[in-house]
Length: 109
Image (cartoon, rainbow, N blue to C red; front, side):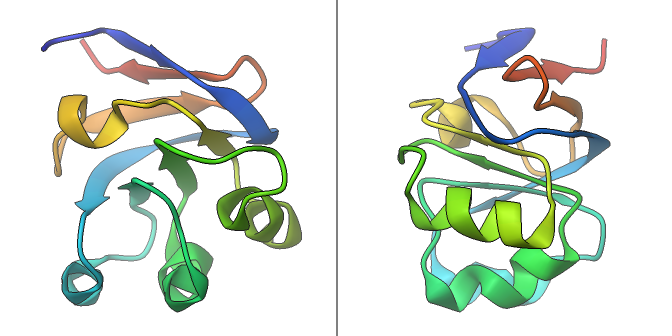
């Protein structure tokens, strides 16, 4: 599926642009680079070290009191939650804009 925009709920407002890193299993975390956009189903406490390094967080699950939402606010990282399909439509390495003022993730065209 090639969507130009993905929508979700705003967990922490902000703006970021960077390369996507899709994390499906905790073993993939060691590949995470400083400044990448974290894209995952949902975060848990073991995600915190890479959440500190990321430019923004995008999750498929979660509400305003989810782990990703709370930690993103603590770290002041732009965060969009509840996208439902982020890990299936966003690809590691592609550049996206995370507009967490509007709850939109845009692909660079």
